[in-house]
Image 1 (tube, rainbow, N blue to C red):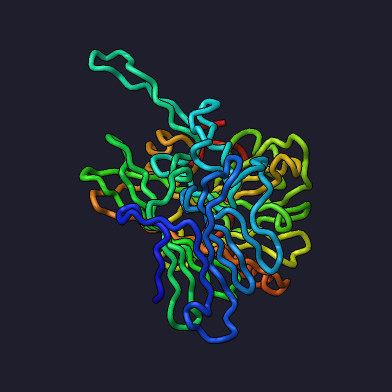
Image 2 (cartoon, rainbow, N blue to C red):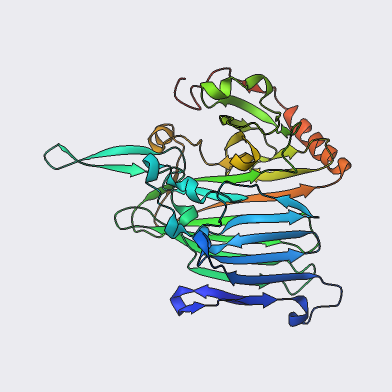
Length: 399
């Protein structure tokens, strides 16, 4: 394996620009891929590191400065990602103040294809009152929307290329969410694609670096806009149970799987679900099918790792952020105290680890879309879906 270190704070290593092609590795003619790294300048993206992977079918931009998130990409010329109102992204975390607007500051940098939410908590913002020694309230602590991991820069970044065909390309990054008296968890991610393939896999390992027991929550916020999202798009997944997050989502329950056109001022809707799976690990998949059914995006993951799933529908006007989110997670995106009371946190003993993996597949042939839909239908046939008409337990507080 050929390996190249781009960032390593332990060795005081940082490379501003990097380019790699098959010819530089002496690989056979006919290989067509590249990996490059640049530091962006200007606006709120100033100082952001970006890595580009390009091969015959797929391109992807990875942002080490923003927690090793996936910014934007394309497959066979079709855009992957969405058009966020954040016009000058990817935004340097220095310009994202998580406590702004009552804990909603995370939204100032939100424009990625895939962003991780966590690790101390990953849901709605909430505030806790901390008592003083005499029993009075000493101070209030705000836990912001979706946590901090997406706004933590990587302290190690490297590129790996397998010597043997098909020469898989992996971008490795390590990101720490560590604070005195609080969480001390390090994430090592390996984002892998095979040249000429129709997707990539994100494999994350989280290790408790503290000498004390800890815990974590994790949500993968995969976000898609046109051309996969449009009027007539459809969500397809093997539902076990599903409920609207709130009364607003309940209003759309009779058509929760389908999407309308961009609608100015549309109020977001979210549906909380458990999917059915196959095998001991509960292998499952969820699909966003484009209008006409000639292309789709598919997420594959394991229920054993990510037992909860959120479908986020935000079909606002195109300039307001026309997007849908497919979100496998360890828990539902409620406040941590609510989720912790229901056992939806991952305990981590000192030195212990937790691994989660998601795979993105992009389909651009009608028969491929039909095959994925048939796979989902086969899994769904194991059990009839239970659809709750109102928000409530075990998904959310009673609506």
